[in-house]
Image (cartoon, rainbow, N blue to C red; front, side):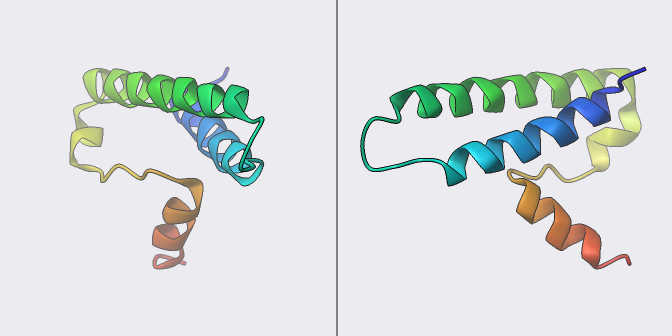
Amino acid sequence: MITINDRIDVLLSEIEYAKSQLQPHDTGHIHTSIHWMEHRLDQLRKQRCDEDPVFKQVPTYTSYEELTVESDKYW
C-alpha cells in the first residue's frame, strides 16, 4: 500500500528533478508541472495532518535537499 508519506517523498524528489531541468526558455511546461506538484504536496501534507495530529508538530520542508540535510542530523 502506498502511504501519504511515500507520495510526499516521491513528489519532493520529482519537484527537485524538474527544477534541475529548467532552462532560460521553452520550459514553461516544466514550470506548470512544478507548480501542480507543489500544490499536490500541500494537499497531501494537509491530509496527513488531518489524519494524524502528530504531524502538526513536524516541520515542513520545501525541497528534497532540505529534508535530507535535516535528516542527516539524526544519523
